[in-house]
Amino acid sequence: MEKHIKAPLTDEDTKNLKSGDYVYITGTIYTARDAAHLRMYEALDQNMPLPIELTHNIIYYMGPSPAREGRPIGSAGPTTASRMDKYAPRLLDLGLKGMIGKGKRNSAVREAIIRNQAVYFAAVGGAGALLSKSITASEVVAYDDLGTEAIRKLEVKNFPVIVVIDSQGNNLYETAVREFGEE
Amino acid sequence: MKTVNVAEITRNIKEMCIEANHFLTSDMDHALKDAINSEKSPLGKQILNQLQDNLQIAGDDMIPICQDTGMAVIFLEIGQDVHFEGGSLEDAVNEGVRQGYVDGFLRKSVVKDPLIRENTRDNTPAVIHYEMTSGDSVKITVAPKGFGSENMSRVFMLKPADGIEGVKNAILTAVKDAGPNACPPMVVGVGIGGTFEKCAFLAKKALTRPVDEHSSIPYVREMEEDLLDKINRTGIGPGGLGGTTTALAVNINTYPTHIAGLPVAVNICCHVNRHAVRTI
Image (cartoon, rainbow over all chains, first blue to last red; front, side):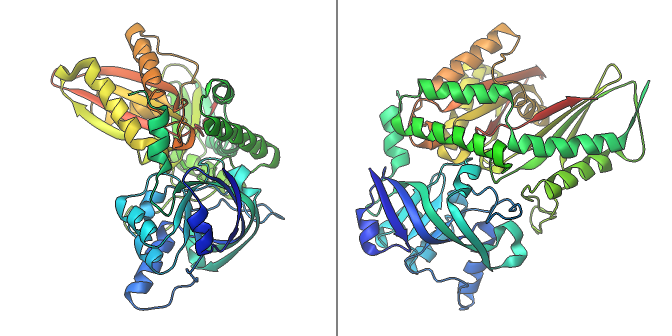
């Protein structure tokens, strides 16, 4: 089913999103990938504040290519989410509502998604040029020294994603492959 | 004897890094277009159409096809009658990569040390494979490799008794484990034989063979066709979201091996199977 939602997300939003829904996101989201997650994790271990507000927000696992002059961002597709599995449950327990990436998640992440009524979206991997067209503004808000891995605040308009794991724990990667597999 | 100034190598590699990251070769382009017609899943079809739009935008607006513009893997096939002048060949290659990635607005994804992980900020060094050939020309292949799919690649040291079925099972295992992580539809590069490192090299090189060309060895060609069919029946589909287009091609290279061994390497590439080739 096609849906349009606003970011940050409400509890109502995540409750209504179902595995397999094709969703267009408009609003504010944040980027973070391996190195930024490690830093946030270390900050939490040291009881330091995080550089971004997690509650109701969406993190996009993405490190863009550099922007050409006059453009908000370069190529901007998702990276493999499983590398963030080590960190995601803790962030979900602190209020993170959504994640955008590509690829499988482990059972700890799935359980944390259910526990916190969150959602895991996939964007189409390897479509970074197309996806960049749905990003209208980008600003580094933390860890500038990490280059492409810095945390960016993005304004997105009709950013296309697919619900993979919904708040009930249904997983499109499992159901869809069963539907088309011949064994 | 031909003399080649290494500045020419730098210039070509710079251009090829930029070219490969914005334009796919025509064989890849055709394979992706053909897949739209055969794909059975409506969502899969929609994703394949998005990939077409993505390629169009990448070329028109000069935005890299994928933000992971890869680690630069470079094959140099050097004729034994070539003499290089003007400095170190390796330095010239890395200078080409540096200029291509910095001037071409490509992402810098290389860290200086695998555990200390400080970004080199210019995507150097490249991974360079040198091969000596006959003649007096230099064939350069620039193949930027993204790590979503690289991370899902495998080496299997099989036993001779495992035979063809064992090899096929290993390849299918690698593909199924990769699933959505490797950004399907994939291209599957396979190396069979040689030693531990030789089979990995064969698999990497296999990814640079056009996807519409088969092995010239009849039984290997049969394996390529059979595996492609089996992979496309796994149901993984475009983006791993279900469908009948999981791979565009299986390219297998073989090499003699030891009486005790059957090494198999599976190097998986996403649908952004990039390479630029020039001969000078």
